[in-house]
Amino acid sequence: MSMQRRTFLRGTLAGSAVGVAVGAGLLTPQAVLAAWPKNAFEAKSVGDALSALHGSSDAADSGDIKIKAPDIAENGAVVPITVDTSLGSVESISVIAEKNPVPLVASYEMGPSAEGFVSMRIKMGKTSDVVAVVKSNGKLFRAAKEVKVTIGGCGG
Image (cartoon, rainbow, N blue to C red; front, side, top):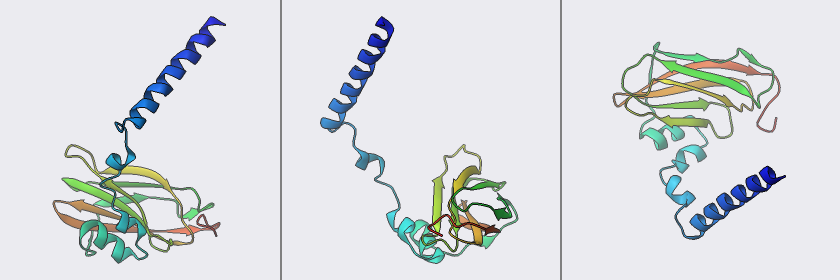
């Protein structure tokens, strides 16, 4: 009984400390989300999303980018995607589902010693290409893979 009381008291103290920090303005979500590229994630076309994200929509095709995704996704609400690249000095990796209502699915800024690899689960509304755009040495490169969706995940 005393262990449950200690756990309860410890949790209460931790919650109170977080509440005080939020109330004092020490923890603010605006500071964390300040660099979020809102225009890119609200863009309705692939070109607009890339322009808002990278300043250009011109990306060269590259065989050095590998997309691992199912040929047929049974459920578009959960489509596993892996992007792996052997390009050097990867600055960012973005994933786009071309026919989604909002095409830009994810964008990752990579640190200087990070490997060019990301893995995620995305939603797809219907059959379309999944495009990976990698920024390396200031240039944009792309690769695409078609994923057929049998049950839509974006309200379909």
